[in-house]
Amino acid sequence: MKENALNRRKFFSILGAGSAALATKPLSIFGSAPVSLSDKPATNIADAAKVARTEWSMPGKFPGKVVQIKNARSVVNGDPVEQEAYRMIEKAMLELTGKTDLGEAWRTFVSPGERIGLKVNPVAGKLLSTSHAVTQSVIKQLEASGIERKNILIWDRRDMELKDVGFTPENYPGISIKGTECQDEKGSFYDADGKLYGERNIDKDWYYWADVEGEYDSETLPYMVNGGKYSYFSKIVTREVDKIINIPILKNAGASITNAMKNLAYGSITNTGRLHAQLWNETSAEVCAFAPLRDKVVLNICDGLKGCFNGGPGANPQFICNYHTILVASDPVALDRVGYDIVAEMRVAKGIQKAPTPEVLKFLDQSAALGLGIADKSSINLNIIELG
Image (cartoon, helix red, strand yellow):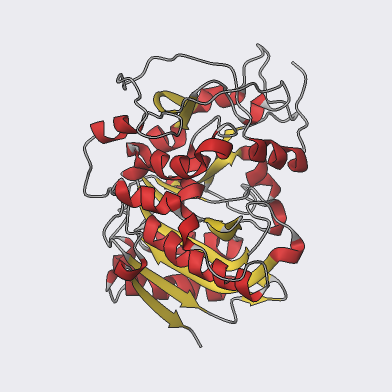
């Protein structure tokens, strides 16, 4: 089959268009008929509640609590500084957990022997990826808490994007690195039998169904793995990790924000192009309500050293800024609500909009209704610390 050569510009235009695909009808552990509760397309969100919650389920150990660490020295000449990122995460972990020992703070969330997935975000390329300063700091602190490198997996949807921004074995020796959608050494998405490599990495027992579909062309389909009305969860989240640490970037999505919830939802399932136009908010909330994310994402570390205030989720140099900030929370909803205020403040300062518009955060209200976290700003316990 012909090799795929979809460039980044076209890829982002496809995401924005919300293109869809050919229908499939897999067997599944879920059997109920989806029911529409609004004028939005129906989804199978009711199936998420069929799996009982656990002690680790969102919003985690510290509902509504967010620690924000500011550090003016965290970015120098446009480059995040690992030593400062380490200090910021260390301080945040101690403040979040109330521990005095860093190893104990980390062991509040993870235990030696567990397989830990680090969900990074390389989608905007080298201009604005989850920084190596933050990622390396997280790994070093995990190791210090008893997690072996062989049990750490850096992951996202696309293997090629991970490599493009430097998540490689050379930079992370002993760490596994994997994308659900992948290519061979020749750059092809297909094996000799014409089957997508990415199909090996999806779990058809776990899916997000939505009554939206369209058609993908042969160039686009490899980036979605499958078409139709089903979005399958990656085996990375269903089978290959025990706990997930979410490391998003502080970015805007129009007047809204793309951070913890969207990084998880859109990064963990296939066939997402169709969901952007009609179900952006619902997807960001509902996918996280399914057990592979709801019960495994124990910690969220927002990389706000650098971010963007306009043009997200892609990266335009004129809109990239230094927030000099790291946010840490077990509650991804509360973390996103705090992150929104930071981005909105910058948008107002830059003249993009006249005032914050928190009414755009429908996905956070929906997430709260699903029991995933605290969206009400007045109920969030925000601890702001500025390092000298």
